[in-house]
Image 1: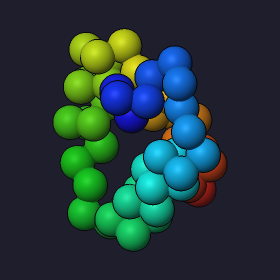
Image 2 (image 1 turned 135 degrees about the vertical axis):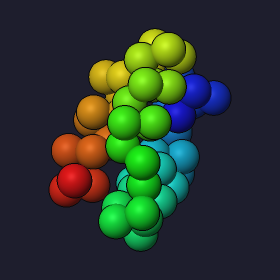
Image 3 (image 1 turned 45 degrees about the vertical axis):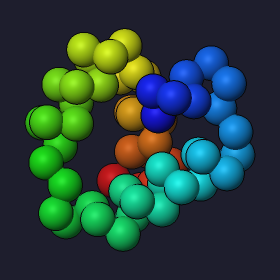
Length: 54
């Protein structure tokens, strides 16, 4: 997500969503959220969660 910040491609976005959907029960959400905030991509992560149905 960080690499695509500001120039997000559809393929990269689908990849992110696919990972979230496939790994939703084993992800450490607090870890992801903390790093997303640190890297200033929290809004993108939130959008990905919503779109992935998490």
